[in-house]
Structures are given as structure tokens and as C-alpha cells.
Length: 238
Image (cartoon, rainbow, N blue to C red; front, top):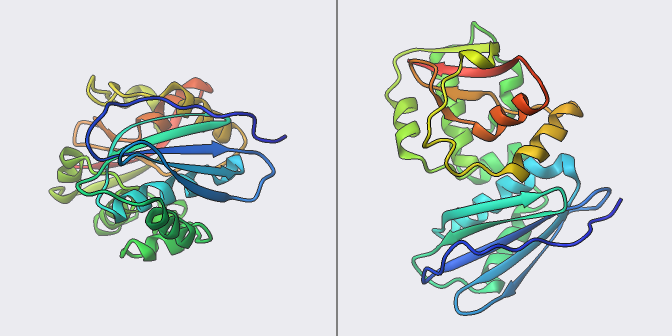
């Protein structure tokens, strides 16, 4: 099954804006092109297999972060998606494409190294209730860095924690959601995650605060809920 069409949405008109169009294909080798748009806008187009979504998304965010970009919004679907980012300076299509082409062949572990952190992003599969606070915090910070997550409040929860516990199967109804966390939910991204979960793709654990308030992982939570799962893996920080 091949890629069938694109989606494009506007997320404002700030001075330095980047629109990233991510095309999620099936049975396709990942590829990338960057085209200049109006003013300082750039369009980055991808094709990749569905099960490569997490890695390609990490590449997108790491490429944006490399040029000092700050995400302004995102959308996506089974055949496409986009991420917008604001920049403090103009970025040429050639500059960005060169950086993303450099990242495109890398595995998740190699992306970790490129981001300057320990290659532990996929190490969560070995977590247990005996995993130490230090290891859980190190993984969480590496996860944020590799995926370009810049939420200061949840980063503070991680950095200021004194203890942590890994839950392999925490009931979904034991997790507290916030209105702010649900404000920018992307239904298409949830649908992608849900389909990948059903096909057996492993996802990182959620990150929770002291009272099991969900700090990071709202789309994963909603995807698990969508397919009827009763439990999910999570790291609780106290």
C-alpha cells in the first residue's frame, strides 16, 4: 500500500516559521526533501513505513531543535502530518535538508548519541520495579532530549524528584489527566499510535508526577484507551 496524498494546516504566522509535512507511507524506504515556502517558511516532506514513525518523528524534532526551533503545533494522519516550529533566525532549505539527511539513516540509539545523551532511549524494555531512581530519571531526561520535548513544568518534576517507581501495568483509571495536558490533543496521532499498539509496537512508558498526574505521554495514554487496554507502563516520580 503506498502513500496517498498530503495534509497541510496553518498554525499561525509568526516571523520565523517552519512547517514540517511528515508523509507516513507503507512498504516504503524513508526519504526526505525540503522545499522553500513563503518568507521564512520551509516544507519538509517524508515517506516512511508506519512502524518507523517514532524514529522519523524523533529525527524531525531533533532537526528542528538543532536549528533552535521551537514547536508551535502538530497534526498527522495515516498518510501524512505536519509540525510547525518558530525560529529566531531564518533557515534555508539546503541547511535543514542537509541536517535531516544526516540524521535519516540513524537508529534510535544513534539519534540518542547525536543528541549528546546516553543511548538508553530503548532501554525501557528492560525496566522492572527494581530499576533505580537514578536510571529512571536518566532515561526520562534522555527521552525528553531525543524527542525534543521542552515542557519546563514536567522537566522540573523529573529533575526535582527524590524517588521513582516503574509500573509495568498501571491501571489507566489510576492515572490523573489535566486540562492543560489534553488541550492540544491530535486525534490523528492518537489513531496512528493506537494502530501501532495493536500491531505490537512497543512504546515508551508514561511519565507521572507524585500523585500519578500524567506529565508526558497523553497521546500514548489516549491510544491505549482507544484500543481498550486496561493498563499501561509508566514511571512515577516523587
